[in-house]
Length: 374
Image (spheres, rainbow, N blue to C red):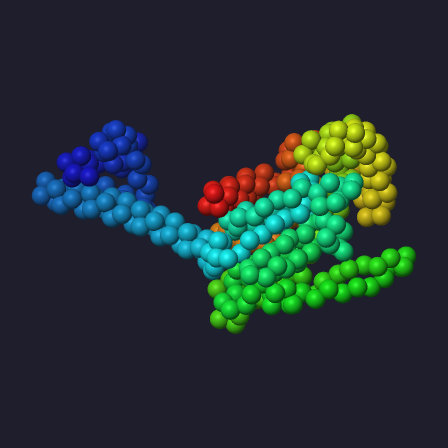
């Protein structure tokens, strides 16, 4: 900014600086500010001093602008570096192919898709017929999601949280193949109080890092513990609030099944029965779920409380629980909440909680990953 473009004058007892660069608008210089005393110097000194003062003020503006630009660029580069560190240390196409067997409207499947999309990993989707499930007849594990990974040897990975932990571990591993990685998450079988066999997995929330990588991806032990705690909270609590809320009333149940049938893999007759009989059945099932999980009569209140609890855990000073970029807990929460999009429960949640800004940020980051993948 040329020195001749700057002048100082007194307005209502305060010094102001006027500049052609700001269309002659006056910038108030309050007593105590460094520019206030510079304004006094410009008015009270000799013409020679005034010229020096104008030059000094010009330099101050130029340096201030340059410093601001420097910090902006530095912040951007740090953010991009952090994104690169959080992305794959192996390129997504480096000999790994993935096939996801899913129901599109399943919250556990949505979690996995959010993770894969954020990490820009290409994958094929096989939509499973929820009635016959013939698409997964090859598997003794009869639930979804199932992920088939092939990096030279085919491996089946079950359970959404195991899928996410295992693939993240694989991406960060220097020398381990997928078969080795899966061995870190052994299957455990037991029977519940009703005598039904239950399958669980050891270490399902652990990302197995080598010592030299741990500090890079988890700067503190608390960061790792926090991520694991909230991933478990998603599976143990948040996901159980979805059905009671989307099937809360007969009208909402019908709306939900209309969406499920439209997005799922149903035949014409199957779709008709699923929509009307399924909606009626799930309305009553949601009542049992409400009792099982000790929910309020108005289950929206439990949903609002859980979502605001999540937002309070993130706090006001970071955009995501992972900091500048989402971590695995962010992706899990987003994936589960996303299945309600287009339904009344989702609109009510957006209107009555503090989640909206975070959710929009998550959308943007998922979209960036998808664009890279394409």
